[in-house]
Image (cartoon, rainbow, N blue to C red; front, side, top):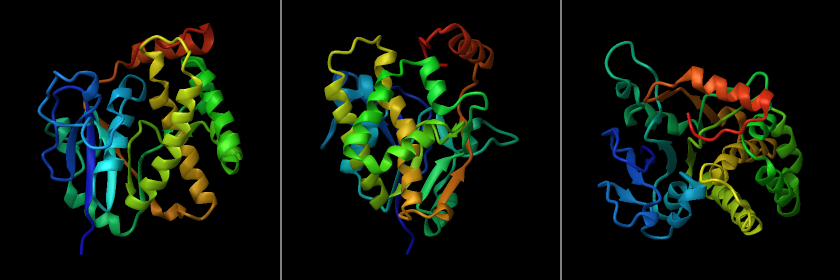
Amino acid sequence: MSKSVQIIVATHKNYYMPPDAIYLPLQVGAACKPDLDKGYTKDDTGENISSKNAGYCELTGLYWAWKNLDADYIGIVHYRRHFGRKTKAGSVSDGIMCGHELIPLLEHFTVFVPKKRHYYIETLYSHYAHTLYPEPLDLSRQIIATKYPEYLKTFDDVMQQKWGYMFNMFILRRDKLNQYCEWLFDILFTLEKRMEDSQFSDFHARFYGRISEILFNVWLRQQIIQGNILQEQVKELDYIYMEKVDWFRKGRAFLGAKFLGRKYEGSF
C-alpha cells in the first residue's frame, strides 16, 4: 500500500500552482488580510498562527499543515520554489516533481531536503550576521542552551558550516514532522516573548522565518547524531526557482553586507 503525501505550496498571491494532487496551495497570512481571497485554502482555519505571518512568513503555513493535515508525509514548498529539475524544453513548471516520482521514494526515505546551498566564503552564522541583525539568532542560542542543552554543541557546529539545507523546504515523515514542529515552535514562541520590545523594519522583522531555516539544520543534524534518523534516510532533491534571479543585484548586496556593513533591505 502506497504512503500518502501532502505538500503545501505557501503563497500570498495568485501564481502558477502544480495540478498534481500531492500539492495543496495555501494562502498564508490570511488572518492579516481577511478581505483578500486568492481562491486557495487559507491558513487561518482550524488551529493556526496565521496572524503571526508578518514575522513568521511561510511558517504560519507549516504550523497549519502540522495541526490540520492528515498524511503519512507532509511537506512545504513555495509558490516560486519547488522540488524538481530544469527541463531542456518547455516551461520551468514542467520540471516540478510529480507524485508518481515522489511516492515510490517514500518507502526508502524519512526526510527530503533541497540540495545543499553553499556559501563558500561565509559560514551560516557570518552570512546571517553580515546581511541581517544577529541578535535574534544569538538569543535563539540562549534559548536552546536553557531548554534543549543537548542541542547546543550541534547549534554551534552548524553555525560554522559553509552550507545548509535552506529555504524552509522539506518533506518529513509525519512522526518526524511532529517532533520537529514541537521543537521549533517552542523555541520561536519563547523567542517571540523575549523580543517583544524589538524595533525592526518590516523586512527585518521576518527573522522568525529566517532563523528557522538554520534551526532546521540543527534539528536534523542532532537527529542523525542521536540515531533517530539515519543519514541514508535523508534524500537530497533538486529544486527549481520559477523566476529569474538578478544575480548582479544579489551579489552586489552581498558584497556590500560583507565588506561595508550594509544590511539587506529587501529580498532578491
